[in-house]
Each structure stands twice: as C-alpha cells, then as structure tokens.
Length: 278
Image (cartoon, rainbow, N blue to C red; front, side, top):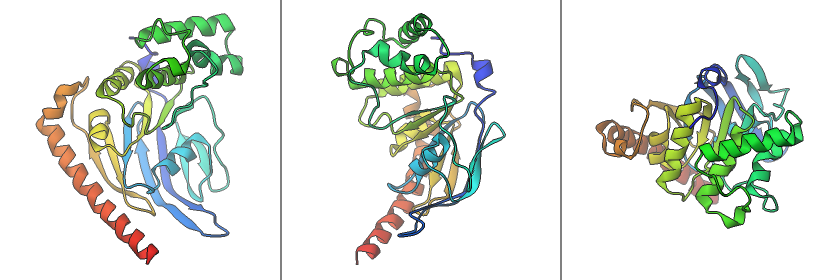
C-alpha cells in the first residue's frame, strides 16, 4: 500500500510546542487549561497524548489545527511560528484533523467525500481528484464502496474513509482526536500500515492506554488541569507492529508505567472535582 512518498513526508511535520499556556474565558471564569507545556515532536514521529478527561489534550490539538489561539508561549511547525500569544494559527491543508465523532458529509458518496477537499481548493481537476481518490481507496482496502453513502458502510470503514480523505492533501501532520473509540483492533492495524508507508507526523489523542502504546513512538502523559507534561514514555517496540506485540515484555512494562502515571493524575483530578463541588 502506497500512501505517499515516505522520504519526503518524513522531512516535514516537526512540531515544537514551547512553554504554551491557555486560559479560557480570560475576562470571566479564567479557566487555566494548559500551563507552561513544552513538547518536541520530530518529523515523522507518531506522538500519542494521554491524560485525565478535561486535562487539556484537545486544547493543544485545536491550537495546532488553528481552531483557537493560545495565551502564552508558541507553537512552531518545521521551524516556522504557527501560533503564539498574539497570532492564532490559520487552518491549512498541511494539518488535517480526523475528529472523534466523524465528519463525513452524509449527503455525499464515499468518492465525493474523499475528493471534496482537493476539488474545492482547486489544486487538481475533478478527474484527477477522482482518479487519485479511487487509487487511495483501493490502497486502503476500500475498493467497491465508492458510490455508497456513509450510512451504508460500517463505522470502521467510515474512519478509514476519513483518513483516506485526509491523506489526499498530503499533509505534513495528521491530527487525530480519539478517532477509534469503540472500534476494533483491525482499524488500529490499518492506521499502523498507513503510518509505516507514509511516515507522516501523527498527533494522536486518546484515553485508551493500550491503544497509545500499541500505536505510538512516544506517549506523552499529561497532568490534570492545568495541563503540562508529567512524563514521556519512549515506546521501544520495533516496527512494523501487529497484535503479537501485546504479549511482549516491553509492551507489558510500558503499559504498567503508563497506568501508574495516569492513575495518579486521575486521582488528583477526582479530588479537585470533589473540592469544587463542596
């Protein structure tokens, strides 16, 4: 399966998050979501971010995507400032988001969904977009469903279609916000295959610790709100990976470390919630 030129893709997509803070509603409730958070994500790295609910994971993803600004610090993409306290990132085809709840247009066929972005942007003709989309869908094992509507295919297929649509633009970074919740391991394997072939930088948010270790090159564990990096786990499991790594000693060790770190922060979050309610 070819999903792009891995050599060229791996030279793009370096993300530097430097001392980033984010305050929501600065003139009212002043909710400090993220404080002094720093991460260095290499081009071509599969970065997974985990932490308690509401800890600020999606806040970082949204800032990279350009959905909102930050209060302090800066985020760079390939050495260029993407956003800082006075400049919000502009959304762009170099950073594509796959959302938790899905974003396929229900009134479009699969083929129309996958070609929509490139056609609207005007970079290629309708015919070129259709040809490229058919090839992409075939490479991802989705041939034969081009004329189906999203409601006519499985949830796992819909997620694969969304990733195919994202890859159509040859982005530098894929931003994935819990895209596989409640889906089976075959979809995880599919994403690993895409990553191994393309070497795109992936910024992946999840609550699933097993998923984080199975997929990631590094797992960034965040503190409870206000969020910053608690610890970084280097996932020293060779690629390519398949289900057999789930019983390896490295996987079991990393899972234990991850559970302990996240559980400690979850207890802090629960205690903070109880105090707020009291």
